[in-house]
Amino acid sequence: MQYLVLAPPVLPPSEPPSGAFALAAGLAGHGREVALLDLSLAFFERVFGSSKMASSAARELAYLRSTIGYEPGRHRTATGLLHKSLSDWGGDHPGWRLTLMDIEGPALAHDPVGLAKAMAKGSSPFAGLWEEVLDPLLDANRQAQVLVSLAYLSQVPATIELIAHLRHRGRRFFVGGSLPTSLAATGHGLEVLQSVLGPLELGDGSTLLDPGERLLDKLAYPHVIPPSAYFTSRPIVPVPLSTGCPWSRCLFCPDRGAPYTAVPMGAIENLLSTIPSEVLARHPVLHLTDSALPPQQLEGLLPLCEPSGLSFYGFARPTKALLRNDLVERAALAGCLMLQLGVESGSASLLARYEKGIDPAEARQVVRRAAQSGIRTYLYMLFGLPAETGEDRHATLDLLVQEADHVDFLNLSLFNLPRFCELAERAHEHDIRTGDYPMTGGIRLYTPFVTSHGNPRREARQFLAAHFRTHPKIRAAVLRTPRWLRPAHLGLMKLPGRSNLC
Ligand code: SF4
Image 1: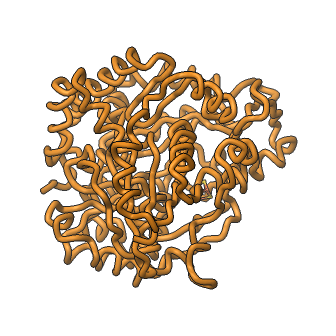
Image 2 (image 1 turned 30 degrees about the vertical axis):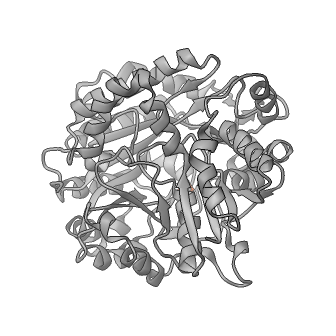
């Protein structure tokens, strides 16, 4: 083995981590011998397998791993009970709080220096994991270069400990991934993270290849070392159809203007054709990992999915490009289980102000036609934009009420202002006054803000509390949307009027 890609805990145990998988798939596509080990899944397996939790968790895990077509209420019970077990786990690990997607340690992950100091003083919940799961692999593959993929802040505590272990073992390793890459591009605190983790690699991993080669130009299904089965009834395969965003103009997007690149369809075809037969036999679902699915790339994917019976889901901008030539309907026939749709607001003027390129009337058509074709719809709504008024919020509420029969799941989020983006740069023009969080010297991706009218996030929070959780037409979608293990599980929910699952 030439490369061993490691994904440190904590990541949702429902699917392979997309960044680490893309790295491994790109290296495999370029003919490198590579294996991927999801240490996060191994960590959850240990947590739930501990004698205290085993009996209570086993039944719920069996449900999540084996049921084709989750029933929303039963799913809520299963994830709720697992979450409760994790709260109990916290009792045995003072200073730590674990959920199905995150971990908080004795100090904030935003403050890696403080976290490293605090962790050095106490015992860690990862103790023994590396020796048990990783060391046998390291011993068996002494020449393999170790690549640690760091995508989220939730992985920082374990990464601190993992690299200490690798150093102790005298292994050469590289740490990179989307967290350091985005901190370098648009965040603050890369140097703080580096002071704890050592040098960090930026970019997508193409530097591991020969000059001029690009990682995602050739893809193949990598060797995935299974510490256990994911907590999902069908295997999820992360597939990037593109990098960057085909729109790339939203004023508050930190990636505005970043280059967009379509992954060659030949690479996708090779990735799909190399899915191992034992994975294919379990009817895998492709998770299209694009920031926003490019309609042309989606067109290219459909003929690859239909004959092989592959299903898929992904995030798309709800624009008329999805309606042209019945793309939505054809996607449904080709196996699209769910579309995550960035509808964001019911106010056309608000969306135009931030150059979102979304028209609520068009977005409604996409939602309706997707649902009528049997595609589950998961709407992402954004509240608390600086210029949002009460009227705008009511327009959003009206949109959701009118489309209630076509809205399956809801993500209601409050706007965070990225620290570095066009909108932050033009704050005065947009009546925005930025501030700072009390902590100094740490990782910061966002900046607090107010406007001359007040605090839009606070107003939006009050509006959501007053209108959303209780509105009879919207409450059903809110209740249907589980708190944990989404979106991987949402495409696998059994819902009347939506596609059957087999
Ligand atoms: S659609 Fe999303 S990824 Fe694309 S520019 Fe807008 S916010 Fe950024």
